[in-house]
Amino acid sequence: MNQNPFINHLETKQLTLAYEGVSVVRNLDLGIPANKITVLVGANGCGKSTLLRGLARLLKPKSGIVYLDGKDIVRLNSKTVAQKLGMLTQSPIAPEGLTVKDLVAMGRYPYQNWLQQWSKQDEQKVIEALEITAMSKLADRALDKLSGGQRQRAWIAMILAQDTDILLLDEPTTFLDLSHQVELLDLLQELHESKGKTIVMVLHDLNLACRYADYLVAVQQGKVYATGIPEQVMTEEMVQEVFGLECRIVCDPVANTPMCIPIGRKIKLTNSQEISF
Image 1: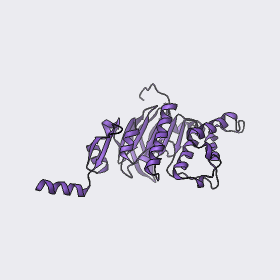
Image 2: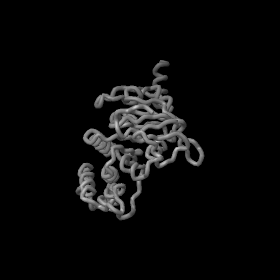
Image 3: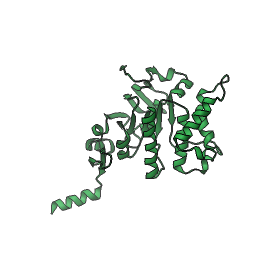
Image 4: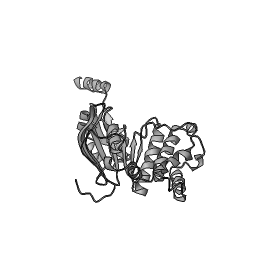
């Protein structure tokens, strides 16, 4: 293994993940930088979400290893993993009638046992998570009475209460309008900067991925196509190879990060007609 000076480092070696015997991620070697925001991008069905589930130990490897702090994650007990790593899946579902505070309190379950029940520290972590996500005033509100953006904040508050150094989020901006997407990603960036969290998330929007990622991973058909800072990874060649889309990469005038401008068929036809004249 590579020697890394950071704690809570996630790394895969020859990782293969499969569903019903069909390999989705194949012989994948990947290091997740600690204390950074890593964003996974790629076409639908390429294995991004499967990889995230493998990193979270929600999917057992067909072969290969996921290392957490240098240890095989499969060999660690569930409580140890839950105290180090928090996972927010796509479209999570909570029991009907659950309040925001009840949901956030579930994040403290990894610290409970028959000798140690609910403590002042547990209560403080819940209060802190509600404050950080600006959900304190909605603590007693039922989840099903919240807007989509508020619900996402509630779920993030839950994994914050879990008090882990690593957060894994699978498409956290799904079903949110643009303003709530930016609001949520700003919150995650603030958490990373203020708390030193290692964040790994799947995003579909390439331009938002470039804005918020310290480290970008492009996934193609279950393998890593490219890794690095957004300026290295977000190229016209990568978008063509990974997404099958012709584009132009320009500088985002607001964030100074790479911005992908897709070229659709109509524009290509218009341009070719102008050239012919």
